[in-house]
Length: 264
Image (cartoon, rainbow, N blue to C red; front, side, top):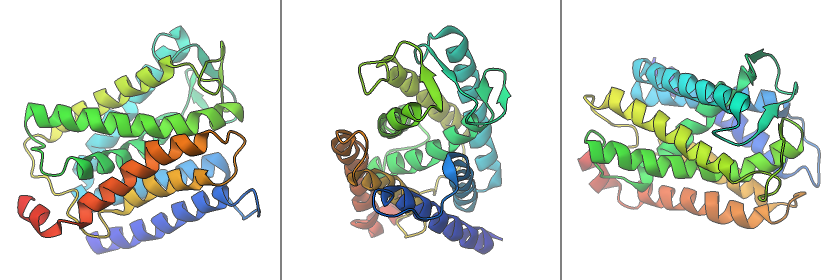
């Protein structure tokens, strides 16, 4: 069963890489793609399957449930009040809504939550994942890694009309408050998941190529912004906010494999 899951994860990894590559090459050639919704669903499937192959369906289900509940509740509060992320609302581009939030949004949170968590796990390799300090440390770094991703993604997605910042913002039309909201949301998710897992053995990142796939996706997404974009300044942001942490995480995974295997 686990071998089948790994094979499926590899297949989905190839699909995610292809879609990211198609977006990166769009200034020169128009490769077939699935649009934002299709990309989200393929990427979500990769995150779920890779997570299940790595830590089992039970922990994956808990991780997904914590992510979906917390992200949906904070998004719903955010849209209705503007307190968390700033004043915004979703357009009809992302499909059916539950309340004021598209159903796709909590799914997209897990799509990004999982790879960002693996990047943080690699960067903090050797930190005790079961202690209160360790859980909070992972949550803080993973929240920063995840929010860095949104610093790249949000300007383009909002400019395309997927959601509307009602009062604009000083960061490519996005308010700074949005990123504090992302830090809060992701920190709560990671702490919640960490507390649920604190009594279980952890072997999520073990220094092999399969374990590194989410990190590779994270870094590759950042690299895709090195091609010409409508907001060229995002190339600099993408390099330092996503590519560099992704490369550091890959180095941490592969440069001291034997030592890390002893730790896990």
